[in-house]
Length: 374
Image 1 (cartoon, rainbow, N blue to C red):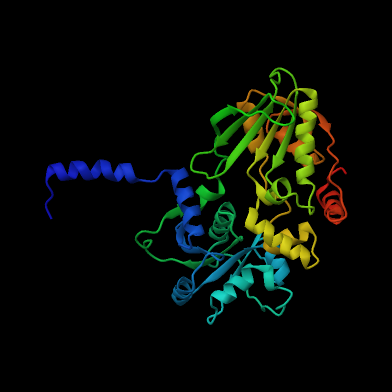
Image 2: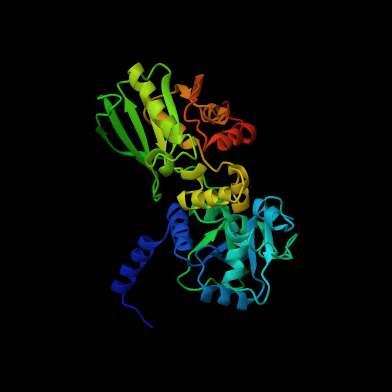
């Protein structure tokens, strides 16, 4: 149908205005997975529909299964728990049985009922170039993790164009995504119990709902190593006083040390549960009640020992003008990550507090399996 020149001139800039850039596309993909919506992943001429196992609705599981060739992408850690072969190294593509329903998907992805219903499987897993490819599966898992969901995705190979209204994401965009640049949103004076000369800086990355905080004590010099701590958010320990970890005591001891020295900076990073999010952390706690240690619980959920990205802390320190730190930590990995990110660590300052009868085994696991110096 013929369109007037004026209508065409309006539609062209509108199309450009509404087009998603890479960061917006990734943010949209994370949000859609959290809402239980599918997305399309593409790579090297292949495409697949992907749906997060945790938020999938029964009707959508049935629709994807009816399309044929459905698989459930899980990490190799979760596959090991299920005794499923992970031919792809870091992940496994599990064939979805023809009669599988939402309950099967959830039971395969979530270890909550593993002990009460241990007879799962047997599982058949894909290998080689069978679709969806490992690259597409890897991207789906990466997005599920970024959305703070269980790292499992229901996938179906797609022939032809993507369904209307579903966001399309190149797998390379997911797997090669760089750390988003943080910017300071606001800073304000906040008198603290440890020092009235407290100042709070809030940082955000574009299109990310995480908010990272730098708590500056006094007026630390920018041309000398600053007493610093990278502290990952711990709702249960920091706010509720949980005895299951040593996070709360470490937070308060670090601030007290900075207050007594008159200067320091504490980075409060929005990386709850070693980067897996609060809901998954509570899942890990539930597994610990079944007898698994903190590392084993993370693995049964499909996560690595530690999913945090300490480059975020380095980026904030640089933004505040610091290039060298005296780092309050028992974790040598933090020292290594800071050095790798361009922050010089002149001293590791031990922070050994918080041991109690409830967390003794947890701390022993941190020392034995995560290398903490306790």
